[in-house]
Image (cartoon, rainbow, N blue to C red; front, top):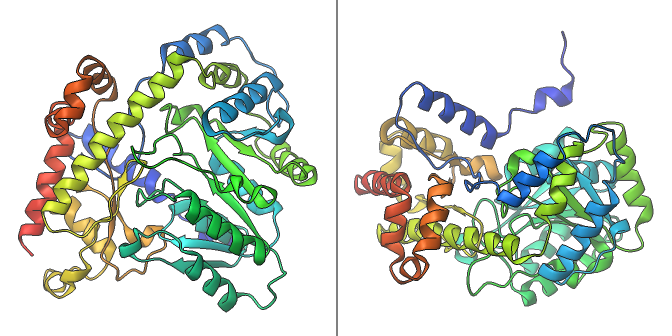
Amino acid sequence: MQLSKAAKRIKPSATLAINELITQRRKQGEEILHMGFGESPFPVHPLVRKALCENAGQKSYLATQGIKPLREQISKFYDKVFNLQYSADQIVVGPGSKVLLFDALVALEGPLFLPAPSWVSYQHQARLLGKEVYHVKTIPEDSYRLTPEAFEQSLQQNTQNPSDQKVLLLNYPCNPTGHSFSAEQLKALAKVARDYNVIVLSDEIYGLVSFKGQEHHSIAEFYPEGTLVTGGLSKDRSLGGFRVGVMLFPEDEQSLLTSICSIGSETWSCVAAPIQYAAIQAYQTTPEILDYIRDCANIHELATRYVYKQIHEAGIRCPPPQGAFYLMPDWNEHQKVLKGMGITTSKELAEQLLKKWNVASLPGSEFGMPVENLCIRIATVDYDGEEALTFFRGNREQAFEKPDEFVKSIAPRLVAACNQIKGFNSLI
């Protein structure tokens, strides 16, 4: 059967592909240190599990936009936790934020601007739709953070008419780098977006996995009329397999919301009924749910800062994390030595770490970086989340006072992976 041109351009998601590969190799008895996939490892909250069981009999098709009780609870959650005011009628619930972002790209006119690096699927979704994609260069000295100057320069270089609509997809705390933005930095980006008629898709799925000293702000606070915010349950509530994503729309964009629901009605129809009813519990703002979110975020921070410290002390360049559970170290200062080892691309670097050091990672080229840029993305979640959460809750003060000892206790595979990376680096 002949494939379409669009289908030929698309390959499997790098993050999902690496996870399937490592799962397979582990089943075959190989000891792989898995830093290639970012799935939050913590157990389903008991109240959410109970709600899912109680609603297992929900079997009807539901409205594509999502059931109103769930959207009303999401509205309350965003008001309480993020101080963002969206009515239930401004919210769409979809089968993961990935699908909602894709549908927004279907519905919105204009080319896509992406900071480089950015998450693997953004560029592929846009190219599947035939959209132009422009990567905006960022630098490690700025923690790969998009600056208003670089953004404006890219807009001027790649568009002829400033008034034509364009789209920026922003993700923070960031996968793959762990950086975030201050309120002032977001205000500056919002000004550029407003001046150049840029619609912002703000992927804030990691918003509640922000580290201490880094308060999360949404760019929608400063550019409400031009921002669509996405979130979901996969990261801060460890419910990736539930496939619950949300999109928050500006107040006066009913036609866009209707369009995205129409697209959804012709593709995914609705989120599974039992999951939607269980998600009402997951979006509660009770102490039980909020304490769970904070405890998991604290463990993410302790683990990620530990890995960063090990990498930094080994002399490997790596921007410091501010949230999420990722880091992006690079070996660009050692290109000459690595070339002698047969490593000239980030893909070859990742392959070397996997084949000879049993550390799974992803090459920077998967995230929009030039192939010759010797950077990789590593995730910091290769540990038993249930054991980690139980141990943390019983040793909270000790975990903060002696973070290295805590991580060594709950995440021996992370410790081993750091030692392997340092061993590789010692050869350079």
